[in-house]
Structure formats: structure tokens, C-alpha cells
Length: 124
Image (tube, rainbow, N blue to C red; front, top):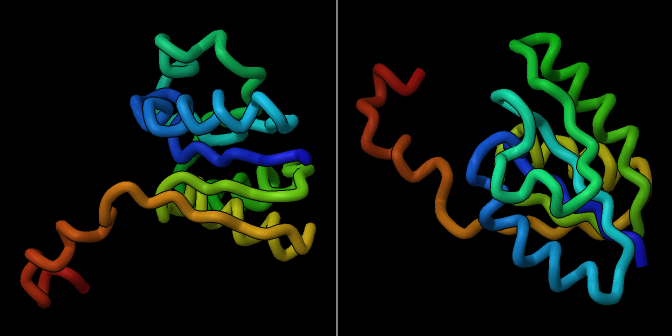
């Protein structure tokens, strides 16, 4: 089975979550590890672990075009998105729509939890 892993920021420690899951899946499946970089290069501790397909993220609205482009690069039977963020989940949703492949979302914590503490006037 071909599995696409969508990392939200391959230049940061978000690869710490992706790495162990990818290593286990790689035992029996072909992996495609894709994502955006919001900094220079791949996160050093995991730089040589996989053959990454990454894009240097740009600002809006160019980023939306980049999401579409990266989603078009996904070739998998299943899609695994890490974190409910535009840089991973949006890519996964578009790829899922095109491929009709199952999409799994890995949320180890509530990404928007901090938002509940923002006063309503500031949230808008």
C-alpha cells in the first residue's frame, strides 16, 4: 500500500511526531512524505531519514496555490495528515477528493485550544 504522510512543517520539530509513525509504516508500506517548510531545510535530526517532497511556504494568497500544487503531487492509497493545519489538512482534503483515498488526521493536541482564551472582539 502507498501511504502519503503530510507533515505541517518539515523544517521544525513537527517531524518529531511524524518520524516514529513513518518508521513503523515503512516496514510494510511505501511512503511518500510531503510537506511545507516554514524555515530553512528539513529539521536536522531527521534530514536524512526519508526522501521528502517539500515546498518553501510563501505568504497568502500564494500559499493557497501551493497547497493545491502539493495536493496534486500526492500519489497514495491512504493519506495521513499530521495536525489540523492548512499546511497538512488542507493538502490532505484536496488529495482525498482527487484520489478518493481515505484520509486520517493525527491530532496529538488541540491546535486551536489557545483561541478560546482570546476575547471575542479580538478573535474576529
